[in-house]
Length: 315
Image 1 (spheres, one colour):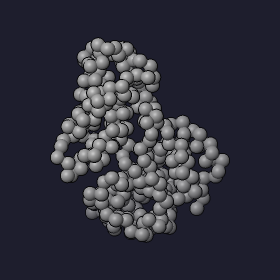
Image 2 (cartoon, one colour):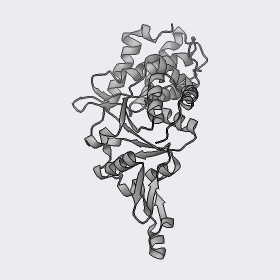
Image 3 (cartoon, helix red, strand yellow):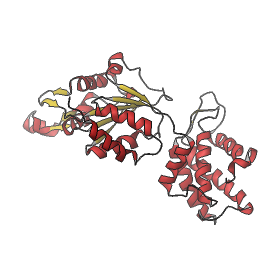
């Protein structure tokens, strides 16, 4: 298979890296794998920049990124395509009335087929992918053989924290895929992401910079709480900050205001209320836990603002 040349990879790396925060190593590894013509599975929780990274790479290469959600309803026909029933009745089967599925589209256009929740797809669907991965071609009855363009790749993702409704992948599937574990970013990187997505200041004494720091802190705390099976990604911190900005405006607090001794208690309540809206639906409790998302978030808030109030102070 023709692969992207080394100079192209080097040039693309610099431009793609400018769109990401704190994913230098992962970007190098993914870019190296796809440039080498390999398919890859990215294993990690939601909200760890997997889609952002792939969107940046395909955007740089000028090729499509096609999304597919792996589930029990993802049949080979939905993945490969089907003949239009109405036209078949009038014209009989032909290549002209074939409606291409995402796999066929990706092969024809040389794009990336990104399959989320890969291990939820049925075995017969995965077997269809095996042919595309191994031979880079696909034989479709009454259509012919589809040859993949050189930039075609299959990218899969799996969430290691969620095994409900999933199936164990066969050794044949594993043998055809490279693998990379993608975990949550560190505190500094997640703050950078929130700043980038919200436009709030990254430092200073204004309420906006406090929101960045505290939104990231309480969101990261959801991943360590003993009653939580899977905590929130950085998307929760982004939403928390954005909701808090609007809620603050309703309560007379501006992101540009300096947080004073008098407004500290108002600010703390502001964060607590925004946490309920932004995070309660994003945390998944342990099945044995006798609690609620709201109680868990209250505990996290108390740890941050009452038990350790210095953590919520500037500096």
